Length: 490
Ligand SMILES: Cc1ncc(COP(=O)(O)O)c(C=O)c1O
Image (cartoon, rainbow, N blue to C red; front, top):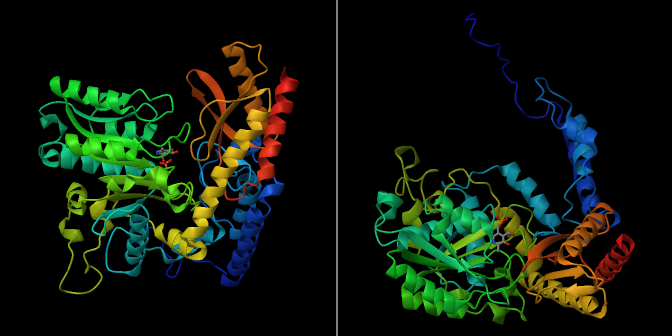
């Protein structure tokens, strides 16, 4: 025998050694998963990972197998016990979603079928196409638009901005690259834009200076008069404006730019109109919020998240592009090993290859959890959940205004409330330290998990209520605890 060959055992696979035992374990895992979500309210929102757990999570990979049940017990001890806990009714940090039970089960099914959504002739791309069509209709884009599901809005914005740069750069950017640009290409947005757009512009080779941030107005929206002056000045200086990124729901305060005004401006100036709707685009599902998003349907492209306010388990974002040909022209690349057999039948037939519309070739079946969750709940229920979060934000706003020691720090945009504890006799630095300490105590006591931001130099607690499990009483508790902790710390 050749010494270089390892001994192979015919029949060894990665399937269970004992299917009955695996079935029992699978049932236990499902039961534990459902109990975990059902009892979310009874657990602390957050607890830090103990040092010994963190240490165990630095161990090298095992060379030898373990029993699946033993691996699961380790998961329960070291991982399940210290989650981020987005499923908790008082998780309001950054901007997340709370997950759905059927969405989680759909992930199991997606991994069970294990299809590759890059392309080929099978059913999963039809599911993604249907889901993308639902979202396209939801945001009011025409039937001929293209789109695909992405890991999140970062990737959705990156995909859209790639198309914007290539389609509106004024020359063949894809072939010649940005080094051939007759001047620096520039995209514009308000200073409240999410950082992922800056990363996208930098990755697209345009540099940090390729994104011009227009100082936001007092209500945290894009200042169109300044934008107009800046674009004119930049053109005069030889720069090449190609795109405006409007935000529908900013990360700091939930502000929505005047989308009709941006659409008018872009049409006049020949600029690509992109909307970052990661937070707010899905608010079109709520009857009382739809009007605030008017004009979004006029965009050239839109990026949004389904794992935020629609609570699809991470990861699930979506990009829609009005000009499907421009979208495909930016990403399609078909080497011989990916040729399609349009006439010949078989697995390589069919023209629906999502890899033609984004960076990834291998893609997961994230469409299934979206498809199953939307079918289970219907869009109207999602709309009601969104509307209730906005009502809760205003309820919290009223509680803040009624408490002498609390200050509302910005207009409430959608479901985001910024506040601080302010006893009235502290300077800015001391106030910031006090509110930082309040936040840490809120989180470490396990009561609630808001996060923070800085608005006009002032540190604030930031409560982003995209949570379908929050109840009005949760905000009574939050306010009572902020007041209690603030007074105690004084
Ligand atoms: C306005 C906005 N855009 C983009 C993103 C990035 O989205 P993701 O985290 O899904 O990549 C976020 C995330 O919070 C956001 O709030």
